Image 1 (tube, rainbow, N blue to C red):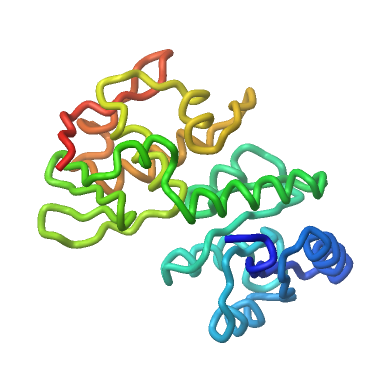
Image 2 (cartoon, one colour):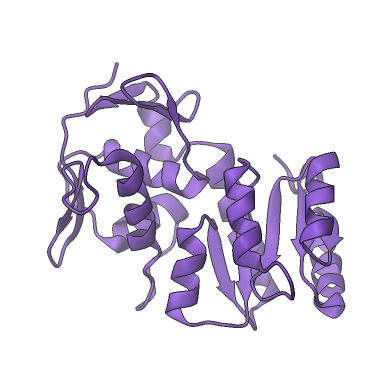
Length: 239
């Protein structure tokens, strides 16, 4: 997917910010549609092929968290969330309800473009490890089909994953029984190191556990290693 064929939807109630982002992203080769609220967002999603949403958190009426949750429930495109509230708790909440990345305001527009490119890469193609191990991986009754980018349970029913959750699961499952730190996982899945307060990997792990563990409070698939990181414990022979 090239920038010129990529269609972004910017959702922000501030007209000045909408116009600024539209001009900047257009100069970088993207097609951009701008919406002032959730109603316009839904209308554009219904009749246009949107590849990624840049979504403001704080909006009057239906806020960004509610809209992001609705996008995830509908299996919509990836979401990069923006917020003037830079607190860790707000960022974690945004990631918990399905945002693929989070950028606090004020931000450098170049960083937004870099985040957009990274999220689109994760959504469009498997990571390098998944390309090397291109088959299906079977573990604990689940099948991770890397060719189709799908996870199915023992009944053959699909387990819905965001792009970030999928990439994280691939990173873990293709490195079984190896301790991976937050830095390792961020580097593998996003190509960047963790900041001192970057808890996005913890949030993604928590969401994955709710989807694949029998008891997320007592995980047996993705285990926490004290002061180390995480380890994928099952044997995962490729089929």
